[in-house]
Length: 213
Image 1 (cartoon, rainbow, N blue to C red):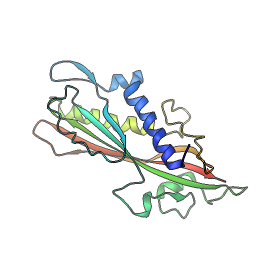
Image 2: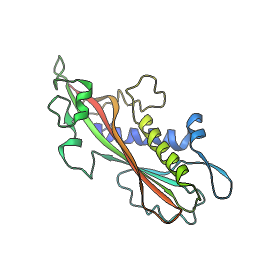
Image 3: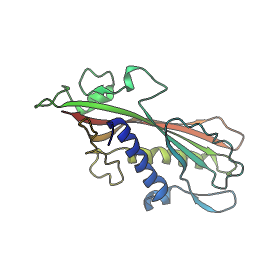
């Protein structure tokens, strides 16, 4: 155990690694299957999941037989947006993040003195369809499936989400415990790329409700 934010980072990385690389659920594997330019059926899975910035050059894929390739980075808060909207904050109605109000938490304290916090993270991804001869429609389908699976895997609020991130109960040495994870917002957009090749990027913003006595 350590500090709650770092513990949650490590937990989320391990969860995504297990669900998206080590043991892909059968129903997701079927949806993420595509046919490459050689006529071989492959499963689009991340070639890299890491904590922090993506510093490798994922466009150098000419010798990589596993293209398309997706890369996922998990970061604390949102390094590209330092406004108050995605900082850690006390879970109360005065939080500047509109997503906080969806749970109708009106006060930052529970009976007995427990303080509730939002611990916030950003899960970014890029998908490169380079030298893979995918149609634009197929690239669109696969990129949005990566977004959709990340939304499912990063959420723990829905009781029927058997593949969700069950972070509840994670407790650090300072006495702060995770309750549940919520996906607050997401985006997935197509970027420019070489002719007949496609690059997509997106992000999932995740907030974890915690309590500290």
